[in-house]
Image (cartoon, rainbow, N blue to C red):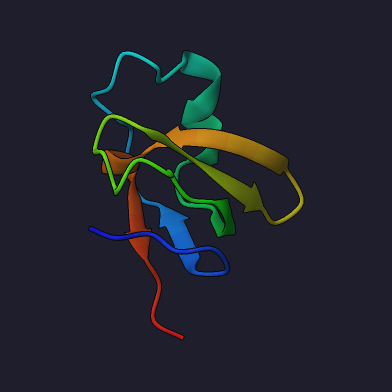
Amino acid sequence: MVFRRGQKVEIFKKSADESWASYMDEYVGLHGVITDPDNTINDPDALVEVSLEGKGTHRFPQDCLRHLEV
């Protein structure tokens, strides 16, 4: 999956990645906008920065994100 700056995404599930922290569970189901996609040619292990509506900006593993239709 390719992520680009400005794309709308949803945190649709908990990640299996070791960088997932328990406090991130509260973000499942929230929508946001990609502010900083990974710069290593969509390395699935790279974290993606997402600005969540009302919750600030956080870095998430890619396996918990999905594109939202515009």
